[in-house]
Image (cartoon, rainbow, N blue to C red; front, side, top):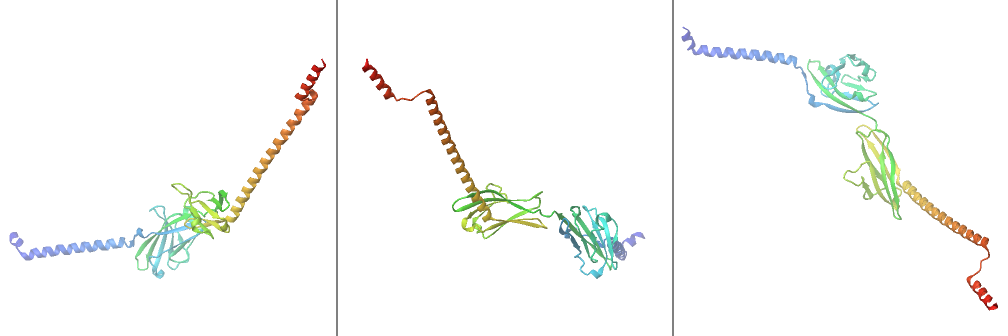
Length: 312
């Protein structure tokens, strides 16, 4: 009897149909369960990079969900790394956030201007790192938005130093160096000129690795009204210093003139001292001869000897 059943084609197709129905039921259950657990879509590839200056402020703004009215809740978290700590939660209809942790670090400096934004003021270097906003919509769906914040020091005021200067009848050759106090990490330097033809500038110092902080200029006396500006900047700040080249060249010419006058004065003093010493030596010699007795010439002595011989 079993053999006759196995040969029944209807039995074969009914078995196959039951198997397909069972498979579809299991797949539908798994898909429904997976959807319940994966309602928040994680997309770390869309990280928004923000920059701030120490003492300044920065604004985080959620851009994934533009309709603020559809947002039910946003949870803001801070790194480091992927180990985020929940900072606060902002609920729909609430004017103040619910703090979860990190109050000591952020509570006096963090403000929530609206449902999709968060502002941190009086930034410190330790605020650098990853941040995450977990967005939950009114329909139960949600997503994550990732941020990364870098905090930089303010740029220190630069100063232009005159390293060397030489003056010729036609040219004023100047080598300048732009200096800042403290570290020069993350700093960029740019030289800008005013009323100076670009072909007269020689950027950098000679050698295989030019120093951008140093600039050499060959300036004709017809362009002494030109000026140079050293601009120092990083990602969030900028400072500059300006130097009038005419003043530097005038000072250099004055220094060279003073040096020439000093050299002439020294040479003159040496000559006067030499003449004084010669006069002193001459006076000393005459005084010595007077002490020994009267001076007579050789011719006079010969005459006296001849006269004596004639008397004898």
